Image (cartoon, rainbow, N blue to C red; front, side, top):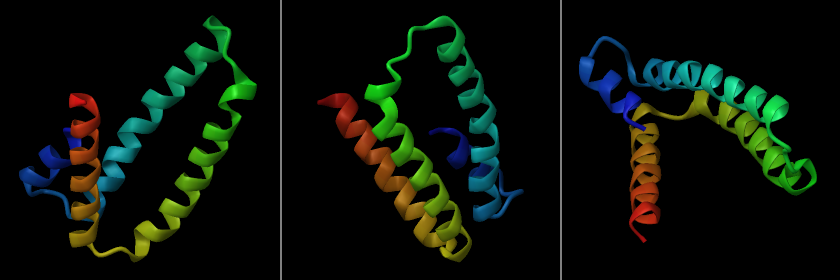
Length: 91
């Protein structure tokens, strides 16, 4: 959550490059987390299937829309997610 604003403030990357860089950084972290769950935890695959399928579908759709989205809207959408996450954290 902090990575995108920090990269935007540095001014070296454009908005779309910043969001793509954040995803590139998050992906290996998610992969390691997945492997840890796969090998070291009794993971409830059937209960998790709807979330895994929804996440994969959202990733594919988001990747397609990302190319067409203006940078201003990316910033606004990201801000909404941050505010929603803060609200959920506080309640």
